[in-house]
Image 1 (spheres, rainbow, N blue to C red):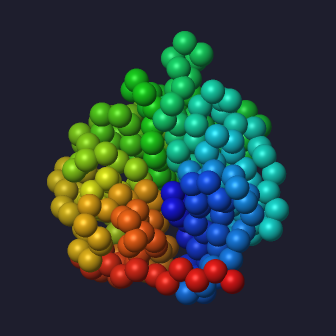
Image 2: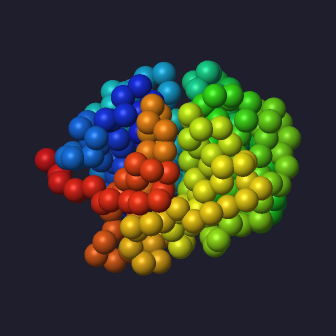
Length: 264
């Protein structure tokens, strides 16, 4: 599993992306799952429009959009055909404003690590977050859409002006970073998925602590999502041999329990 998203308006609606097999969806909080399109399509990132649970974006090499909860998808304009899409974030106040994080490309073809659109993907421009190599993840603070965090090669960067300027707030915390998630009800709390579990900060990145109690040994956490109306409740997509799957924590990452993966 490589992507994970929870609908802001209905926390029982969860979408999961599989590296080479499309999107799956649960409408009962993760007790059962069904296919939700893009079969055999690689999916590296997912996000649900904060204003409607049926509008979903998915990305890897291409960028796709569904407006019917995954029943059908259509391709929308990608920021650049030479880059891969590793992260997507939709502005909670202006759903036509979307950020896309890209991790590979080339400076010679005018590629940056972070792209932004304000017209739903019809046109894109570079954001100022580029630091030689690209961005692996991006999140927008639901409480203040001017506040963003992005994972860049050298660490984590933050913007307080909607992505116009960025500053480095932390070197890579505890290994390679694959996922970011903000707790919308607990200010300055950011969860980071790494190649060795989950770490969190409660002070905007000044200090970090592990949040992997109950996860398998040396888990790679490729996606994270915080339930919008349940503080400290997080979902994680975990890869760790036979114990891979979706895990949930109800206490801010102190303990985790695996969800039952049943397709219907």
